[in-house]
Image 1 (tube, rainbow, N blue to C red):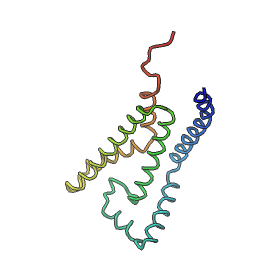
Image 2 (cartoon, rainbow, N blue to C red):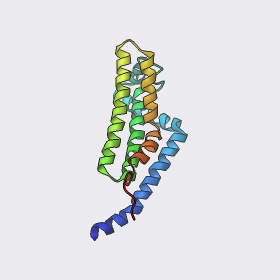
Image 3 (cartoon, rainbow, N blue to C red):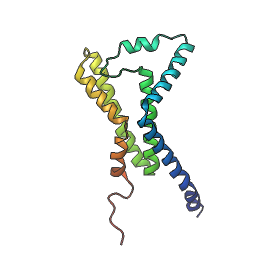
Length: 164
């Protein structure tokens, strides 16, 4: 009985968090430049405080423009925050540990494929096709598309026999 009551009291909070995450992802998607600018300033401050002021610029020089035109720490931070928010949104919506694990495995597989393509492209002498394909995978993962595709596939109750 107490579990039923506590889950009913948690339900509005869960939906508020879902709404906040969805609104935040929408806002970031509408104006990512503001987020990139804030992350750039933050990373510049971190590197400057460590005495590595030119490190961001040096790293960028070794990065193909087919991968990114932004600073690598900024892009990695943005990507991890965005994917983390999408993953949390999926977890809150699915409410099932197994389904959340499946979504996480898919995210990890896609990110690993992108990393392999980018590193492989670099090691093989700057293969443009590997950079482009890796970049497209990253663009897919760092978007709302995985959430929109995974949600109906993993939705609780999918595949159950109808109740009479």
